[in-house]
Amino acid sequence: GESVGLHLPTLSVQEGDNSIINCAYSNSASDYFIWYKQESGKGPQFIIDIRSNMDKRQGQRVTVLLNKTVKHLSLQIAATQPGDSAVYFCAENTGGNQFYFGTGTSLTVIP
Amino acid sequence: KAGVTQTPRYLIKTRGQQVTLSCSPISGHRSVSWYQQTPGQGLQFLFEYFSETQRNKGNFPGRFSGRQFSNSRSEMNVSTLELGDSALYLCASSLGSGGYEQYFGPGTRLTVT
Image 1 (cartoon, helix red, strand yellow):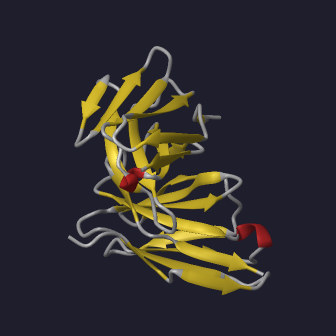
Image 2 (cartoon, rainbow over the protein chains, first blue to last red; image 1 turned 90 degrees about the horizontal axis):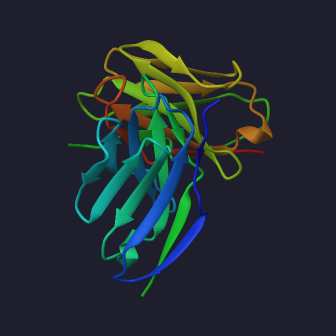
């Protein structure tokens, strides 16, 4: 079956630095991807999405890169702030609204 | 615009009992998906409802069921609760089914004792 894996379970960065969170996916048929942020006690919060016909998409302080050749996604957060501390998930969609989620990366921002 | 709401937020049940959780999607959204989140298994897809019909189903036993009403509100039911059903149950809503942004509610924390 499909699997979505994250390279690093934890990531610590200094406030003001850029963060990069990586994600590998296994299903080459996946055509839509979402990055979520989940804070303790809350549901996942939509950050940014990207479709398979794109390789880069930018939002406010965030950029998602998609490399279909190696089935890899990354989330870049510019000028990381303490409020960015959370668990980040990538999710892949192959059809309908069934998403497969990665295990998550815990980002800690050091003031 | 109000977000996805879920009720109740917390629930404690005993093994063997059944439970019903409720989800109200964002206004105008017609698709509701349910997920189970546990420390050991992460976020796992349960099922999706769109226009009152189940569109997709994850790999969960038949004890897990759901339905959607004409106003797009959805309920999920778990019968004969087991200790392993303790989890955060999350509901997500989308405008449509397939390739749409999906927004999550705060979840219902179910504890089975």
